[in-house]
Image 1 (tube, rainbow, N blue to C red):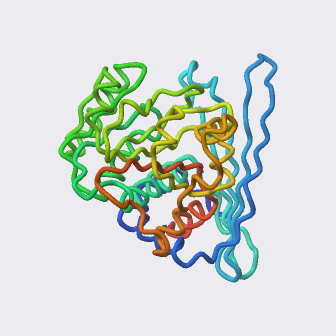
Image 2 (image 1 turned 120 degrees about the vertical axis):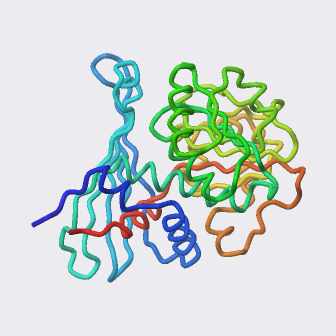
Amino acid sequence: MTQFLDGTEINQQLDWPSLIAQLKDWFTASKVQAPERQICTIEQPDGSTASLLIMPAWIPGQAIGVKVVTFFPQNASQGLSTINAGYLSFDGQTGQLRAVMEGDALTEQRTAAASALAASYLARKNAKRLLVVGTGQLARSVATAHAAVRSYDSIHIWGRTSSKAQTVAEDLQALGLPAAATTDLQTACRGADVISTVTASTRPIIHGEWLKPGTHLDLIGAFQPNMRESDTKAITQANLFVDNPVGALQAGDLATPLTEGAIQESHISATLTDLCQGSSKGRKSNTEYTVFKSVGMALEDLAAASLIRVP
Protein backbone atom coordinates (compact mmCIF):
# COMPACT_ATOMS: atom_id res chain seq x y z
CA MET A 1 0.00 0.00 0.00
CA THR A 2 1.31 3.45 -0.95
CA GLN A 3 2.36 5.49 2.06
CA PHE A 4 1.45 9.15 2.62
CA LEU A 5 3.90 11.24 4.59
CA ASP A 6 2.73 14.59 5.91
CA GLY A 7 4.78 17.69 6.66
CA THR A 8 5.23 16.82 10.32
CA GLU A 9 6.83 13.49 9.53
CA ILE A 10 9.06 15.03 6.86
CA ASN A 11 10.25 17.76 9.23
CA GLN A 12 10.97 15.18 11.91
CA GLN A 13 13.08 13.06 9.58
CA LEU A 14 15.15 15.80 7.93
CA ASP A 15 17.89 17.73 9.70
CA TRP A 16 20.06 20.51 8.28
CA PRO A 17 23.50 18.85 8.50
CA SER A 18 22.31 15.67 6.75
CA LEU A 19 20.30 17.48 4.09
CA ILE A 20 23.01 20.04 3.30
CA ALA A 21 25.58 17.25 3.06
CA GLN A 22 23.26 15.25 0.81
CA LEU A 23 22.78 18.21 -1.53
CA LYS A 24 26.51 18.83 -1.68
CA ASP A 25 27.15 15.16 -2.53
CA TRP A 26 24.48 15.10 -5.22
CA PHE A 27 25.58 18.37 -6.81
CA THR A 28 29.14 17.06 -6.80
CA ALA A 29 28.21 13.72 -8.40
CA SER A 30 25.80 15.36 -10.86
CA LYS A 31 24.13 12.09 -11.78
CA VAL A 32 20.50 13.19 -11.69
CA GLN A 33 18.54 13.40 -14.93
CA ALA A 34 16.18 16.36 -14.63
CA PRO A 35 14.32 17.99 -17.56
CA GLU A 36 13.66 21.70 -17.20
CA ARG A 37 10.64 22.39 -15.04
CA GLN A 38 7.38 23.18 -16.76
CA ILE A 39 5.48 26.30 -15.67
CA CYS A 40 1.89 27.04 -16.61
CA THR A 41 0.48 30.43 -15.58
CA ILE A 42 -3.23 31.14 -15.95
CA GLU A 43 -5.66 33.92 -15.14
CA GLN A 44 -8.21 33.08 -12.48
CA PRO A 45 -11.90 34.06 -12.79
CA ASP A 46 -11.30 36.90 -10.29
CA GLY A 47 -8.56 38.38 -12.52
CA SER A 48 -5.63 37.18 -10.42
CA THR A 49 -2.96 34.88 -11.81
CA ALA A 50 -1.89 31.46 -10.57
CA SER A 51 0.86 29.07 -11.62
CA LEU A 52 1.39 25.32 -11.81
CA LEU A 53 4.95 23.93 -11.82
CA ILE A 54 5.98 20.35 -12.67
CA MET A 55 9.47 19.21 -11.70
CA PRO A 56 10.62 15.62 -12.49
CA ALA A 57 13.98 14.02 -11.62
CA TRP A 58 15.46 10.55 -12.10
CA ILE A 59 18.55 8.61 -11.10
CA PRO A 60 18.43 5.45 -13.27
CA GLY A 61 18.11 2.36 -11.13
CA GLN A 62 17.92 4.33 -7.90
CA ALA A 63 15.12 6.87 -7.54
CA ILE A 64 12.42 8.75 -9.45
CA GLY A 65 10.43 11.70 -8.21
CA VAL A 66 8.02 14.33 -9.48
CA LYS A 67 6.98 17.46 -7.63
CA VAL A 68 3.83 19.36 -8.56
CA VAL A 69 3.55 22.89 -7.17
CA THR A 70 0.80 25.51 -7.24
CA PHE A 71 1.50 29.20 -6.66
CA PHE A 72 -1.53 31.34 -5.76
CA PRO A 73 -0.16 34.73 -4.56
CA GLN A 74 -3.68 36.00 -3.79
CA ASN A 75 -3.93 33.39 -1.01
CA ALA A 76 -1.85 35.64 1.26
CA SER A 77 -4.75 38.08 1.65
CA GLN A 78 -6.90 35.18 2.90
CA GLY A 79 -4.35 33.90 5.37
CA LEU A 80 -3.65 30.85 3.20
CA SER A 81 -0.36 29.43 1.94
CA THR A 82 0.68 30.92 -1.40
CA ILE A 83 2.64 27.80 -2.36
CA ASN A 84 1.26 24.27 -2.11
CA ALA A 85 2.93 21.13 -3.37
CA GLY A 86 2.81 17.36 -3.55
CA TYR A 87 5.64 14.93 -4.25
CA LEU A 88 5.44 11.49 -5.85
CA SER A 89 8.32 9.14 -5.04
CA PHE A 90 8.86 6.05 -7.23
CA ASP A 91 11.18 3.06 -6.93
CA GLY A 92 14.07 3.58 -9.35
CA GLN A 93 14.35 -0.10 -10.25
CA THR A 94 10.70 -1.10 -10.69
CA GLY A 95 8.94 2.21 -11.29
CA GLN A 96 6.42 1.40 -8.56
CA LEU A 97 4.96 4.24 -6.54
CA ARG A 98 6.91 4.38 -3.27
CA ALA A 99 5.21 7.21 -1.42
CA VAL A 100 3.18 10.38 -1.70
CA MET A 101 4.66 13.23 0.29
CA GLU A 102 3.31 16.59 1.36
CA GLY A 103 5.50 18.78 -0.82
CA ASP A 104 5.43 22.06 1.10
CA ALA A 105 7.70 20.84 3.90
CA LEU A 106 9.98 19.12 1.40
CA THR A 107 10.27 22.34 -0.64
CA GLU A 108 10.95 24.47 2.44
CA GLN A 109 13.69 22.17 3.66
CA ARG A 110 15.54 21.67 0.38
CA THR A 111 15.27 25.37 -0.59
CA ALA A 112 16.69 26.55 2.70
CA ALA A 113 19.39 23.86 2.64
CA ALA A 114 20.49 24.85 -0.88
CA SER A 115 20.62 28.49 0.20
CA ALA A 116 22.78 27.64 3.20
CA LEU A 117 25.01 25.42 1.05
CA ALA A 118 25.59 28.26 -1.41
CA ALA A 119 26.34 30.66 1.46
CA SER A 120 28.99 28.28 2.77
CA TYR A 121 30.94 29.07 -0.42
CA LEU A 122 29.87 32.65 -1.05
CA ALA A 123 29.46 34.43 2.30
CA ARG A 124 32.55 35.87 3.97
CA LYS A 125 34.12 33.51 6.50
CA ASN A 126 33.72 36.18 9.18
CA ALA A 127 30.03 36.88 8.40
CA LYS A 128 28.21 37.45 11.69
CA ARG A 129 24.97 39.32 10.83
CA LEU A 130 22.12 37.62 8.95
CA LEU A 131 19.03 39.42 7.67
CA VAL A 132 15.97 37.46 6.53
CA VAL A 133 13.54 39.51 4.42
CA GLY A 134 10.06 38.01 4.47
CA THR A 135 7.86 36.34 7.05
CA GLY A 136 6.18 33.53 5.12
CA GLN A 137 6.66 29.78 5.05
CA LEU A 138 10.38 29.90 4.29
CA ALA A 139 11.57 32.54 6.75
CA ARG A 140 12.12 30.25 9.74
CA SER A 141 13.69 27.46 7.69
CA VAL A 142 16.10 29.81 5.92
CA ALA A 143 17.22 31.32 9.22
CA THR A 144 17.80 27.97 10.91
CA ALA A 145 19.52 26.47 7.84
CA HIS A 146 21.95 29.39 7.59
CA ALA A 147 22.59 29.17 11.32
CA ALA A 148 23.52 25.49 10.81
CA VAL A 149 26.30 26.51 8.41
CA ARG A 150 27.88 29.20 10.63
CA SER A 151 27.31 30.90 13.95
CA TYR A 152 25.65 34.34 13.69
CA ASP A 153 25.80 37.03 16.35
CA SER A 154 22.48 38.44 15.15
CA ILE A 155 19.59 37.35 12.93
CA HIS A 156 17.21 40.15 11.99
CA ILE A 157 13.77 39.53 10.49
CA TRP A 158 11.98 42.13 8.36
CA GLY A 159 8.49 41.90 6.93
CA ARG A 160 5.86 44.27 5.58
CA THR A 161 3.77 43.41 8.65
CA SER A 162 5.87 44.07 11.74
CA SER A 163 3.81 41.76 13.95
CA LYS A 164 4.58 38.82 11.66
CA ALA A 165 8.29 39.64 11.77
CA GLN A 166 8.08 39.70 15.55
CA THR A 167 6.39 36.29 15.59
CA VAL A 168 9.10 34.76 13.39
CA ALA A 169 11.80 36.30 15.58
CA GLU A 170 10.19 34.91 18.74
CA ASP A 171 9.95 31.44 17.17
CA LEU A 172 13.67 31.57 16.38
CA GLN A 173 14.48 32.84 19.87
CA ALA A 174 12.68 29.79 21.23
CA LEU A 175 15.19 27.69 19.30
CA GLY A 176 18.06 29.52 20.96
CA LEU A 177 18.94 31.77 18.03
CA PRO A 178 19.86 35.48 18.47
CA ALA A 179 16.86 36.73 16.49
CA ALA A 180 15.06 40.08 16.58
CA ALA A 181 12.51 41.83 14.39
CA THR A 182 13.38 45.06 12.60
CA THR A 183 11.16 47.69 11.01
CA ASP A 184 13.95 49.56 9.17
CA LEU A 185 14.88 47.52 6.10
CA GLN A 186 17.44 49.97 4.73
CA THR A 187 19.39 50.15 7.98
CA ALA A 188 19.19 46.39 8.41
CA CYS A 189 20.57 45.87 4.90
CA ARG A 190 23.45 48.28 5.53
CA GLY A 191 24.46 46.32 8.62
CA ALA A 192 24.00 42.78 7.30
CA ASP A 193 26.73 40.42 6.08
CA VAL A 194 24.26 37.95 4.57
CA ILE A 195 20.78 38.85 3.31
CA SER A 196 18.26 36.16 2.39
CA THR A 197 15.02 37.22 0.68
CA VAL A 198 11.92 35.01 0.75
CA THR A 199 9.09 37.17 -0.55
CA ALA A 200 6.61 37.20 -3.43
CA SER A 201 7.53 40.78 -4.34
CA THR A 202 6.94 42.06 -7.86
CA ARG A 203 9.24 45.08 -7.50
CA PRO A 204 12.68 45.54 -5.94
CA ILE A 205 12.80 45.74 -2.17
CA ILE A 206 16.60 45.29 -1.87
CA HIS A 207 18.67 48.09 -3.37
CA GLY A 208 22.30 47.72 -4.32
CA GLU A 209 23.27 51.05 -2.80
CA TRP A 210 22.15 49.75 0.61
CA LEU A 211 24.67 46.90 0.57
CA LYS A 212 28.15 47.24 2.01
CA PRO A 213 31.17 45.69 0.24
CA GLY A 214 31.46 42.00 1.05
CA THR A 215 27.71 41.42 1.39
CA HIS A 216 26.27 38.12 0.21
CA LEU A 217 22.74 38.45 -1.19
CA ASP A 218 20.65 35.30 -1.35
CA LEU A 219 17.60 35.78 -3.61
CA ILE A 220 14.98 33.05 -3.22
CA GLY A 221 11.45 34.40 -3.58
CA ALA A 222 11.09 35.61 -7.17
CA PHE A 223 10.89 32.80 -9.72
CA GLN A 224 8.84 34.36 -12.55
CA PRO A 225 9.59 37.28 -14.93
CA ASN A 226 7.07 39.56 -13.18
CA MET A 227 8.57 38.91 -9.73
CA ARG A 228 11.58 40.78 -8.42
CA GLU A 229 13.28 41.26 -5.05
CA SER A 230 16.47 43.14 -6.03
CA ASP A 231 17.21 46.19 -8.16
CA THR A 232 19.58 46.22 -11.13
CA LYS A 233 22.52 47.68 -9.19
CA ALA A 234 22.42 44.82 -6.69
CA ILE A 235 22.95 42.43 -9.61
CA THR A 236 25.42 44.36 -11.75
CA GLN A 237 27.81 45.12 -8.89
CA ALA A 238 27.99 41.49 -7.78
CA ASN A 239 29.70 38.26 -8.67
CA LEU A 240 26.62 36.23 -9.66
CA PHE A 241 25.94 32.55 -8.94
CA VAL A 242 22.79 30.49 -9.62
CA ASP A 243 21.40 27.02 -9.05
CA ASN A 244 19.68 26.60 -12.41
CA PRO A 245 20.87 28.99 -15.17
CA VAL A 246 17.81 28.54 -17.40
CA GLY A 247 15.31 29.12 -14.61
CA ALA A 248 17.33 31.90 -13.00
CA LEU A 249 17.50 33.91 -16.23
CA GLN A 250 13.71 33.70 -16.50
CA ALA A 251 13.19 35.16 -13.02
CA GLY A 252 12.70 38.91 -12.74
CA ASP A 253 15.84 39.52 -10.67
CA LEU A 254 17.93 38.57 -13.70
CA ALA A 255 15.41 38.76 -16.54
CA THR A 256 14.83 42.50 -16.05
CA PRO A 257 18.52 43.55 -16.04
CA LEU A 258 19.02 41.23 -19.01
CA THR A 259 16.19 42.94 -20.93
CA GLU A 260 17.58 46.35 -19.96
CA GLY A 261 20.96 45.39 -21.38
CA ALA A 262 22.56 45.89 -17.98
CA ILE A 263 23.88 42.31 -17.93
CA GLN A 264 24.48 39.47 -20.37
CA GLU A 265 23.99 35.78 -19.73
CA SER A 266 27.76 35.63 -19.25
CA HIS A 267 27.33 37.71 -16.07
CA ILE A 268 26.62 34.39 -14.32
CA SER A 269 29.98 33.37 -12.86
CA ALA A 270 29.11 29.78 -11.93
CA THR A 271 26.44 27.41 -10.70
CA LEU A 272 25.99 25.67 -7.38
CA THR A 273 27.17 22.51 -9.13
CA ASP A 274 30.41 24.29 -10.10
CA LEU A 275 30.91 25.40 -6.50
CA CYS A 276 30.37 21.90 -5.11
CA GLN A 277 32.60 20.28 -7.73
CA GLY A 278 35.37 22.81 -7.11
CA SER A 279 35.52 24.17 -10.66
CA SER A 280 34.63 27.60 -9.21
CA LYS A 281 36.19 28.97 -6.04
CA GLY A 282 33.22 31.24 -5.38
CA ARG A 283 34.09 34.31 -3.36
CA LYS A 284 37.46 35.79 -4.26
CA SER A 285 37.82 38.53 -1.64
CA ASN A 286 36.24 39.94 1.50
CA THR A 287 35.15 43.09 -0.31
CA GLU A 288 33.36 41.72 -3.37
CA TYR A 289 29.59 41.52 -3.53
CA THR A 290 28.13 38.06 -4.19
CA VAL A 291 24.61 37.09 -5.24
CA PHE A 292 23.08 33.63 -5.30
CA LYS A 293 19.87 33.49 -7.33
CA SER A 294 17.83 30.44 -6.39
CA VAL A 295 14.85 29.18 -8.36
CA GLY A 296 14.93 25.58 -7.17
CA MET A 297 15.84 22.34 -8.92
CA ALA A 298 14.24 18.92 -9.12
CA LEU A 299 17.59 17.45 -8.05
CA GLU A 300 17.13 19.14 -4.68
CA ASP A 301 13.67 17.64 -4.19
CA LEU A 302 14.83 14.14 -5.09
CA ALA A 303 17.86 14.47 -2.80
CA ALA A 304 15.63 15.45 0.11
CA ALA A 305 12.98 12.81 -0.65
CA SER A 306 15.62 10.09 -0.79
CA LEU A 307 16.48 10.79 2.87
CA ILE A 308 12.88 10.14 3.94
CA ARG A 309 12.31 6.67 5.35
CA VAL A 310 9.05 5.15 4.13
CA PRO A 311 7.35 2.88 6.71
